[in-house]
Amino acid sequence: MTKVAVTGNIGSGKTECIKFITKLGFFTISSDTIISKLYKDKLTRRIILEKLRLNDHNYKQEILNMLKNEEFNRKVKRVIYPLLYSKKKLIAQKHNSYQPVFYEIPLLFEENLNNNFNVTIFVNSDTIKRKQRVLNRGVSEDYFKLMNNKQIKENIKKNKSTFTVNNNGSILNLRLNIIKLLNKL
Image (cartoon, rainbow, N blue to C red; front, side):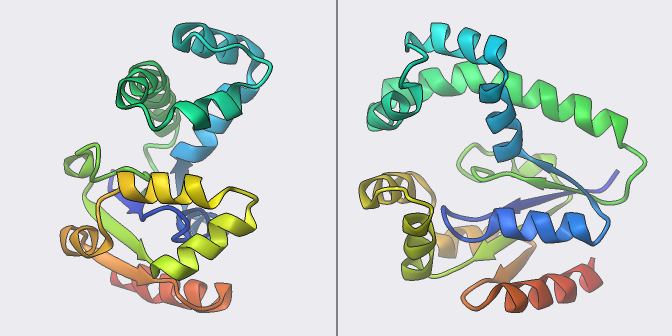
């Protein structure tokens, strides 16, 4: 199976890229979607929050407040990543006949996961555009700065990636760039 990682910094358009690739008929696996589903499942959320020592009432805000704490970040990873990886593995096994399979991996290089993939696609967008997209989602500027600072700089990711898709224009422009890239795979 050919495994293609799609990555990019916060607000770059990874999710939009994956959605479009899915619409084109390719099989995709999204880390963000899996994590969202983990939290939506009441039992799984309760287990996660117990391990993080957070209560259910305002857990999203508590997590955001604690993200500045590196020990808490490591703890979140120890709790979430095993669940995430096991879900990805189960999903991938069901669809191992698909060629290629696209994985949305926001922290591909930060977590040194790039060796697990045959091809890497970096969704590149300038910081001002990324920030505006994140703010349009209703997230604070402080959150954007925090998450942006935790990620490897764009030029390094671009150099480490097999391909780069630029996303500084419209959604149509992004889609055209994706189609061009898919023709190279």
